[in-house]
Length: 422
Image (cartoon, rainbow, N blue to C red; front, side):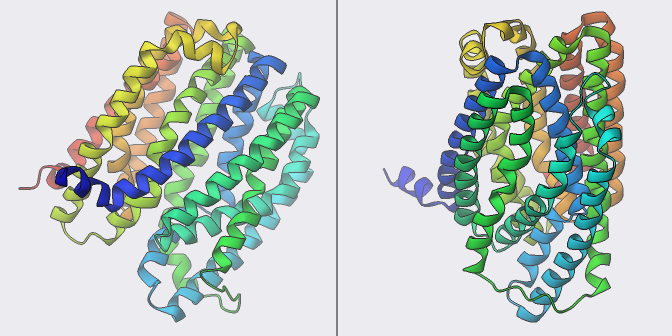
């Protein structure tokens, strides 16, 4: 009994438990949204929404200049120094505001070009990018505010924001997809996350008052390395994924690209648990760690406490895959059953790699991060290009598994002195 009481009293357990509620809700929201897309839009529409989601990720990191993890790190460092904290936050918000205005203008005036790039010449969704230009400031502001809350280690508030945001997002998504099909699905992708702004603004006003009075280039210099890392991992990474999906469309058709997106979407649901717990709990811990032994302790805490639960979940998902597919999507998507094995193998190695990858951000190991990230993106694209003509759509997920296996080996070799320190 004492053993279990000790576990339950741990901060990680408490954060994980609350986070699990958020993830379950997010999964439920994703399930309902995916179900509506499958029923009212179909595989082709699934592929289009996948491309827009990838663009959203790229624009998010361009607009925030990749500062999210840097904000978490420096807010955690300056939280007890009110002057530095105010200077830092004022500088970041002013700069991001300027970039956001420029991006919004670009989205509006280059809507035709972006439509051809993201959706192809057969579709005309220019209005989506004009709408994006309006919602972008709210979306980026919410990301900054949530990063600030993370920096203060206000785990519960961050998760509460996510829970409220998901509920609002579900309402928007169901309504828009039901009445406007593909157009509604695309609109929902833009509107739902923008609603997070109002919730996160309410939460942060209760913790800190931000005054936009100062601008110091010193703080921008400190954050510039995070910009480089985010540009490589998310901007280039997102366009690699768009290119892969467009490659599948050209070689195998829109439906196959929709199946690929459906598999990726299922994967993203259970990876939410890892990404959230890493951001709200492990990243601040890694940022504060000053010795290899402290960092090793954080690594192994993740490997021992989180990975076994994740692996158990993967096994259950694989065994129930034929029941999961028609529940989440529809019978039209049953053929993705053959993609599960390689996808789950890839997710296993990705899960192992994530905690090691976060060390790059925690300690600003910019050069090493860029080299390893570009290498993994090259492996992913080239292996996909090689395997699709041989194995069809299954080749795309085989390439995914191969990429993260290689990536994990590379990271273990790079951080060997920390992972295996005596």
